[in-house]
Amino acid sequence: MTRTSAESSAPISCSRRVALKQSAAGLMVTAGLTSMNSTPMTAHATQSSTIDPRPWVKIRGVYGGLPKAIFDRGQKPADYGINAIWIGSGGLKQEEIERCHALGLKVFADFNSMHFSGYLTGHPDAAPIGVDGQRCPPPHGWQGISPFHTGYRMNRMDEFRRVLKTFDIDGIWLDYHHSHASWERDQPAMPDTDFCPAALQQFTKTSAIKLPANASEAAKRLLGPHRDAWTQFRCDVFTDWVREYREIVDAERPNALLGTFHCPWSPEDFDGAIRHKLAIDLPAQAKYIDVFSVMPYHARFGHHKNPTWINRQTESLGKLLNIRGIPDEKHKIWPIVQLADWGSAVDAEEVPLILDFGTRPPATGVMVFHWSGISQQWDKVESLGKVYRAM
Image (cartoon, rainbow, N blue to C red; front, top):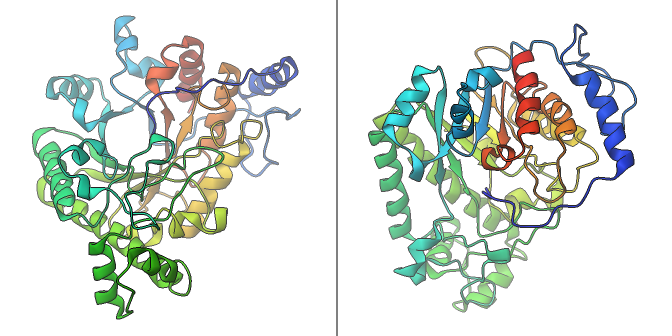
């Protein structure tokens, strides 16, 4: 998950600003009732909708660290309806966690699974191998690590265990748990990997399919006649990592939730890329995961004019995993929605619409991406607070 917006943002046209203000005005808190079965609104909708209390939305969070800007104003997160925060595991401090707990906040950690690129400095053999049998360059600078490297897996599991032992957190979310790729954009770059010797040997052992000794020739077979078997094999490896993460949670902090941030695509998007390219098998991972935090960044993914896409993706995930958003359900969907500028700009007037579509069933919680961005645009924080308090 990207932390900052390094790319320029497209300006919002005057006509779009007017349309947004008109539709958002109706979304700000009134005595009306939102019809959950009404025709979905777009950013250009002429009809208005309102956000009533939404008792099914248990978590109203912010992603990206301690909300220091709120404390600096002499206020509390509860003044903005916030009851949960997500902090990178490397930035956790026990005294801050205790302070947040005293204020009624849930504190969740964000854990980097497959993107700890610093590991390659001393272990260059942990880099993913491409179809040419050589180290695959990082697409758009996003450097993944081979899931087949035993030393890297041990490194991540040891760090995961340390975080859970050390800090009194309410849960921990897997981040970057997918293959070497750059998918957080409207035009993703997803090279085919990982054709390292360990992967090819393991595939042959588990599938009984013999491969050429040459990695490039083996890749042709694996992406051709053996594509489905290769895809399932890679998905199973990533799922097995999740199984081990689950075992550590159960052993070290059994009351903590295990969540995952993951690609928002439906199974058919980009020719099934969520499985074939990213090696993400959500139904298989559901055996070990408590909360699925799909990442429908509408402005980044080319849907800035149609925030209904956010709800469509959570509904699709609910159907895939049979999650309805009802009380006492084993699994939960808490999407992370985009309020910070990344790709196209996001106006404060859009905040109510985004949170409306982000909190419709089957979602039972929501968080916003990302605090470091919106805290520099306080009108967004104010708008967020109005909607969260209404919920």
